[in-house]
Length: 471
Image 1: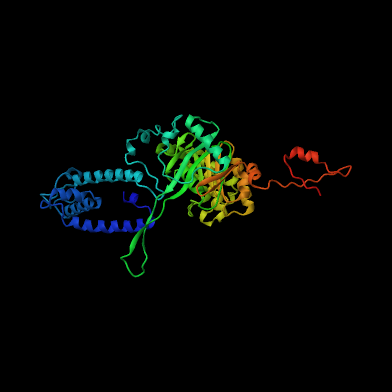
Image 2 (image 1 turned 60 degrees about the vertical axis):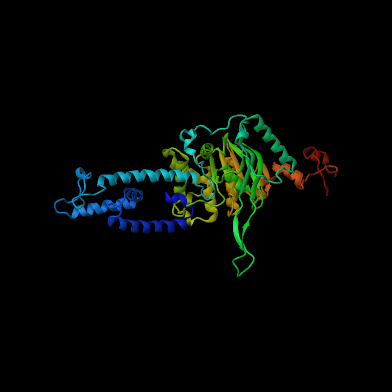
């Protein structure tokens, strides 16, 4: 149970060793007779017995004493409910000790499961205190899918976030469309993800500060302002398309993906992934079965091979055991990692690790895939190959890709959005964005003429509103 209260491995080492020392000392005390004698109160014995090492030490002590007696070597099963000869007036028998050990096992096990669900992890994800009273937790059915017209019942009271209204016409049109669908309870079969006013705010932090170097009397508590990572995102992500999210570091791209995948709890708003709400713990459990994720930083184990990684995640995805090896081998072959099948990942290059992470995200045929900067650290040839894999993977599923590469977004993205300071700044297809914000295409055309005059009419026919330079 103690492990549920600790989130860092460094702290776990210290706490674990401390528990070992404390248990060793309390066991020594228990072997001296405290508090398992008639001279001590029953309340002390009860409290002392809730720590399993104590009651176990008493059992070993009683067995040791019974074994040393010639007339009664040890304790047989038929006599576990009796006192040993060296303790004729004992207050606890071996049978009672067994009961205590079984009781404390289930007690600490139940508490461990409970605290593991309600205590936030590093990212702050947790369930309500009374989560076990929700029938959906046991059945996995209720509360998972949002009914028509009820989307706004899932949107909580978000914190006040300044400057959330969009300034771009395309972004405003997208927001109006999503709001209308949500208000009317419209379900578009072509939409995989519907993001409705998603907000993520990190709370204020407090630090001690001092304006004087040598004096402690001027210590002051400094409070930082809340950080609004995502400021009211309204968005539809279509099936069979790749949605590309561009933006600088700190724009909110990874935070958005973390909210949609359940890594980070949302502060306000909601999002529906194939009709399941990310604001619902049961809905989030359903969503995890539908998605594949390539995180920004590889989650790999150096001691395992590429084949073992894919088999592990295939098992987690619930693939039939008879298909796991063949699916893993196919993924390695498609990812050009076949030669490194039995090589430990610790010997992979950075690009090979990213390649493996993409393969893991696509294994199990997920209906929605999140790729967070998947081609980071790859050489141009490998990057092109990964682009081909991603392009083929669009069929029948929705893909969300974040990147810093304009070239990557232009080649892969069916729709592109640029995000900055937690808000969408523009959205549309590559050609649409170029026509609005860029210089457009530069096309060089060579053609032969019979009379020496260039044929401009065919050019005007194919290129609307073209500006021609003839030379």
